[in-house]
Structures are given as C-alpha cells and as structure tokens.
Image 1 (cartoon, one colour):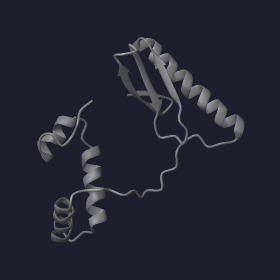
Image 2 (cartoon, rainbow, N blue to C red; image 1 turned 90 degrees about the horizontal axis):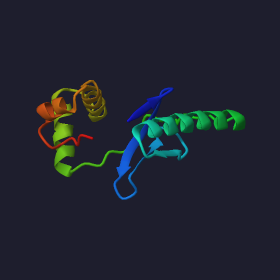
Image 3 (tube, rainbow, N blue to C red; image 1 turned 90 degrees about the vertical axis):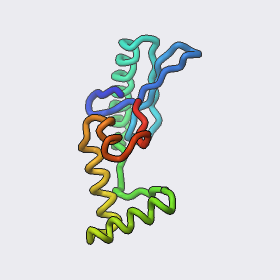
Image 4 (spheres, rainbow, N blue to C red; image 1 turned 45 degrees about the horizontal axis):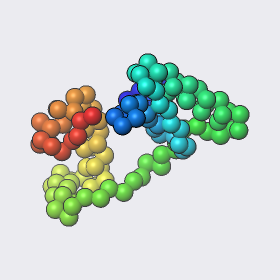
Length: 126
C-alpha cells in the first residue's frame, strides 16, 4: 500500500503485462495509476493524488469519501448466534461488541497477531 498526503493506494502486479497498477482508496471517484518499476509506480501514484486534489479544488468538490459510520456485515448464522450470545453474556449490545472487536483488531500492528488471537487462516496477508 502506498501513502502520500494522507491518501492510500492499493497496489497489484500483472505478470502478463509486467506492470504494477493500483487505485486510490477511500475517495468517491475511480483514480488509477501504474508503473513498470516501483519507482515509476510511486511517482505515478503521487501524480495521481496531486492531479485528483487539483481537479477537486477546481470543480469545488470534496475529495475524501464520506463514511456514514454504518455498514452491513454478512456472516454465517452460527457466527451471528455466537456473537449475539457473547455480547449478551457481557451485557453489551451486539453493535458495541462489533465496534470493540474492530477496534481490537485494528490496534494490532502485525497480522500474525490476529491469527494468534482469532485462529489461523482467518486473515489473508498481502
């Protein structure tokens, strides 16, 4: 993942085209970038961010995506049941349990630490 001016870019590699490519995350628009070397990719990402911010300023648009703070989570019926029971046993709402679980997971710096707490193979590492 790339970071520039508090914007993040997801990065992928195409072995067929031998090129790195990505898109800017957490914005309302689709802005992509690519490069055939890591240096070229970083330069393209920074240019894409700068161009995006300049375009937003010129048209009077807010560049950041607005998050409402609500989202749907799809899970198995068994995980839903276990989560609801866990929350009830700890006298908290299911919503508060999910918020605490997300905050706990995000406070971990090493994805392997999540595996140790939650079990192997629940988290894919990139």
